[in-house]
Length: 254
Image 1: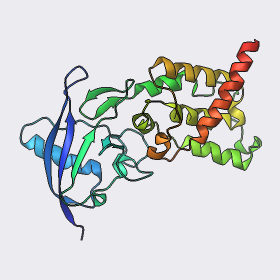
Image 2: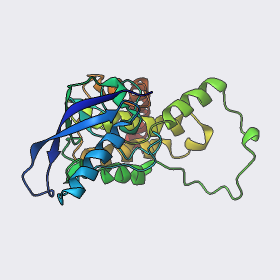
Image 3: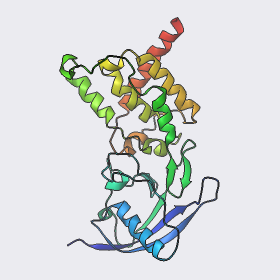
Image 4: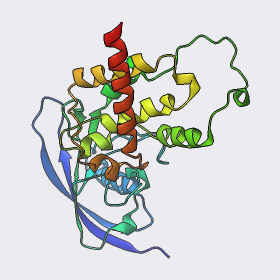
């Protein structure tokens, strides 16, 4: 049988992007330790609804750790205290009876608060639109095995492609830098033949868009890697820097 615990939850409540916000306190009683963190919030919201009060707004979708929709600061940590874990995969068994849990939205200038814990992460979409794709016209998709890719490159590319764009790296970074996200998207294609024709333009345009959207610069704090639920390596940032330098020299010569 699962155990139950009682926790005090302090949640950031903000009616809209232009409203003042504050922490409100709720008591979550008889919470099963088998519940996920979002299920615990669902229980609080059910009680608030029955009381005729406004439920807590928070982002979520798949609840399987693959969509990148969920995300909040839990006791000052993006996605909570467990490594390699999204908020929807965090379970209440990682908390103790009587704990006080403080939940706040991801805070960064490009991530505008919509309501409560829900933030607008469409800035990431803008970065992808700037170059996170392959637009080479190749006709019908070729057989994958006809394009030789070294196993090491394939593995590194897949590791970078694991990024779900949740924004934890930005929220954890003291500078609100999106470099881990951008470098993962660039590395994903820079390591494969398919991404080579547009490599230079991609590196330049995605970084330019990141700067234009108000994200900060990387200062090698490594908080992004520590908080990333998919454990994306900061080695991707080093690879992106190399791609950017190659692209910069190339553009200056033209």
